[in-house]
Amino acid sequence: MNRYLSSRSQLKARLRSGFLRVCLLACFAAQAHAQSSTANVTVDFTQPGMSTSSWSLGATISTYADGGSNLIKGAAQPLWQQYLQDLGPLVWRIPLYYHAGQVGSSAGGIHGGNEGEAYIRAIKAIGGAPMIAIGGTTSDNDIQASDAFDLVHYFNDGDGQHGGPVDAYIVGNEPDNGFGLGNYIAGGNGSSGFHAIVAGLRQATTRQLSIAGPAFTTWASYKYADFQTFFAADNTDVDIVDFHKYGDGQPDANLQRTGQYEDGINWLRNQVTLNFAGRASQIGFQVGEFNYNSYYGSQWRNAFYTSRNLVHTASVIGHVLRAGGRAYQYADNNGPLGLITDGTSRNDQPQGQNIRLPAYWGVSVWSGGAWTRRFGQVMVAASTTLPDVEVFATDNAKKIVLINKSVDTDRHAVLALTGSDSGTYSAWQYVRGMDPGAFMAGPQFQPPLNIVSSIPFAQGGLEVDLPWMSVVVITID
Image 1: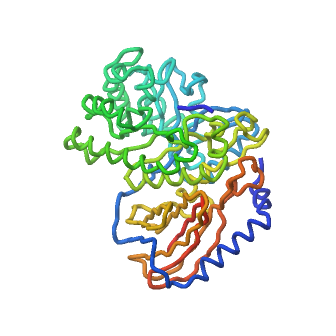
Image 2 (image 1 turned 30 degrees about the horizontal axis):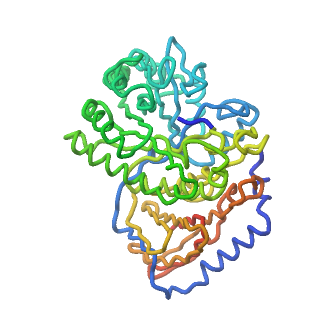
Image 3 (image 1 turned 45 degrees about the horizontal axis):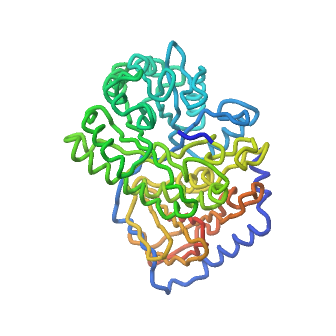
């Protein structure tokens, strides 16, 4: 894990005339182009790919409260709650531990307290599904099987108490970052070992639990042996293969490397096929933490606080979903690495303000939330010949996500749809904003603009402009 108010009506008032001009121009362009050009984007709704589920998209409740507020506490708590709820139903991963009757945060730097029940209730109050990243007595991974057993009892007795039931768990956090893989798997350094911990979790309830691990720091070639060691030891215990992955440390080039997330899931699926025998088809995959980078410094200001972060977030999620995985951003309260600024001036944040960051809007590209349609139940085939452009699409319901990663070149997308010859379409543009200090008016901190509303199309064709460093969402009816 890494650490680093205004009303909705006021936000709407901030859509200056410039934004309205962008909307009108984009709307005109989308409708005025005749379907005469050769298609450069194809979407085939008759070719289903990987299925999605209610567990496919989420983020982490960090339990940090820098600036004094988060989902359950502080003067800005109501705003924080509203902002997270506006994203729509998500999985909310949260680090909690149980020990000596206490259920509190196991996050680094603030391990302790007894607020677990309050967090779980708050997650459910915003329509979320809680997933507990189980922490240990003093740190992330010194987990005792007896405490894991009691944690499940705490939430699941009587078919749900203290805000429960909770049926999704991750065992530990980044055990390859100093704790020791051997200790995590077989026990030691305060841990009972993965198998014993999982046995404790399952024995505590008759409910079906989903248990994830090993939550390694990353997926990369130098981690192959660690994954294989874990698979050999615990292929009968784990249900979801969890790993973390942050950007490669390149403020600009990270944008071009989001396909690594898809590569990681595909490699892991192949390894599971080799190691899990008859269980292989039942195993899921999740990126338990992702972000543009694992830390913040001044050289990252033009990444985290501009549309680069929105584009990166939307692209990562698209690649993970296309590979059949789950994508969980880290985290809600995490300074510039968060979804919402924390109210302090640290790391170039705006003092006294809780602003929805570009990563927040990148998540909303897929979640839909209060603005657009949520992703559908299945990914479908989609491709493009446009340079620096990515396209992803879903069916049930039909949704297309177009991402222009170019740093200076607008594109014009000519779409050819198979399996949807006619109907109506609507489109939203996440307008480019590249001034990292424009927290009040910058378009990268604002909701998407509805540039097309229920326009008829025929012969499976439609067109739309894609400004550089922006995202366009299209829904088909």
